[in-house]
Amino acid sequence: MTLWHGLYLLWLLAGTGDFILHRRSAIDVTSGLHESSLHLVQIGLLGTGTLLWLLFAATPALWLVLLAIVCLHALAGYWDTRAAFPVRTIVPLEQHVHSILDIAPWVALGAIGWPLLSAAPAPSDEGVSLGPDSATTGTWMFALIPALLLTVLPALLEFRRCWRSRHRAR
Image (cartoon, rainbow, N blue to C red; front, side):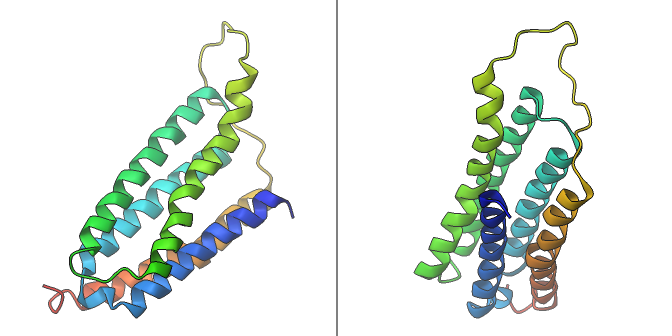
């Protein structure tokens, strides 16, 4: 296992911790569905970025798409905090967990982009194309299974709790 594998797992575990903290602060009866929906948006954005990274070769074009996704994730994170802040206490531990969740996509983007942007390849006649990369089955499994178990499943369970409590959260 590499350092990047460890950092990826740390990021996913931070997501799990965040959902545990949401449950402890009664998100289902405070900020409710609005905040939980924004969590699904953030996971959807980063999940899309992860799938694109797995499917396509690392090119400057892919890096720009991933940059746009990371920016949208940051914006959704801001809206998420705005939705939670007036109605739910965000304890210091949750704020620190959010720091990990906020910075991890930028670190990953930098790790992908640094070799691409610093190499400055010579222009070619092929133009910009996203070609399939050779992500192994092991890479796919390592990227997706922990993400599904540690972030997607807790997010869906949180959303279900909020959906069931939506009348009390108003």
